[in-house]
Length: 389
Ligand code: FAS
Ligand code: PHB
Image 1: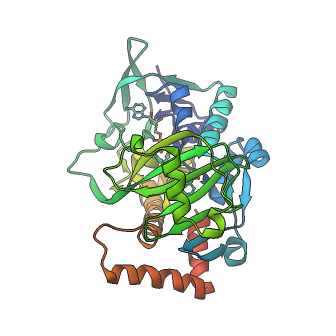
Image 2: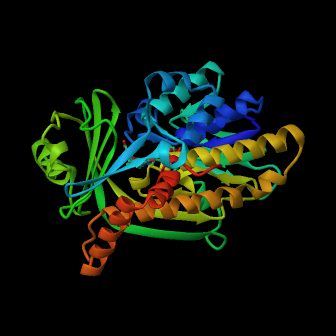
């Protein structure tokens, strides 16, 4: 089997990269460990930056997003019953799109099928070979057959637990990590959202987030200790705790309902440098992880894909390798900005087990500064809506 670009991972990063490259006449093969149904069953991100929206439209997968997505011009931060609105349009002239990652992935699969993309599901034993040479290849098993995929370049889009990042030798990699001492318990319910905009709630009982997927599908999260298990939380207990943390005026009209999905996600900040090694290029969660407090995970995958697709097109269509040589440095500059923003939102809004009175006072001053300063709200809005590519 031969292709121009072998893509490991059929999540949003791998699929979007394949879509953009194929539309430019570059051949790809996507190797995905899970079934398509499994990939589409994962409930993850909910907010798209304007850059991500534009890239999806460039890829030809913007129609349903524009029809069913919900443009948001602001979000709320609350502390007990104090509410601060971040007006995106007034602060930075931008907006975000509320449209679930599951739907983005579904649209990408549909578009890839229409292009006749080669996406192999259920692959196993993926190994990257000779990535430092000019003839790398990937070996794997698929439907019981051992396969060899020869290619010019390999894109590692296989997420945090994939095989691509470890294919860069440990002595070459520099990894930066911060693990947070709590997780997010999230539920999906077929109920109208608690508010028309997202609410990020700082409360002495812990962080909470009121989000949504559409006007009758709500997504809620509460901070929980790492020792908690999903089975520890009945729906009733979740709703009670969520309402205890949201502003009273929101809690009293919040519509409860049965959870149709319930899961706990750990929170970490992680960056791997470099993001490229020889003819291997890491993209998305394979290279970095952010706590979801800043809604950056999926959006960073999109900006990586923007840089990598542009560089691969220059190399493969014009023989110009300059951008490809700079891919990792260019992507990392934006990754670290988003890393800092996600860390700052997480430390400002969560309760930490070992926090001191000083820490609590700093949190309070951070929120008071946002309430008092249009400049502070502008800085937050610019990062939340997405810094330029
Ligand atoms: P993905 O992990 O989505 O995709 C990688 C793909 O590679 C997977 O389909 C996997 O099956 C496949 N794969 C792995 N190993 C392989 C191998 N050896 N061979 C072949 N295939 C392999 N971001 C937000 O912005 N907001 C959120 O609220 C949010 N919530 C999240 C909740 C959870 C539980 C998780 C895990 C992440 C969340 N994220 C959130 C981040 C998430 O949206 C990621 O940023 C996004 O999925 C990144 O996309 P990819 O880089 O494509 O990685
Ligand atoms: C979500 O809707 O899942 C979501 C939205 C914003 C975040 C995190 C998660 O910051």
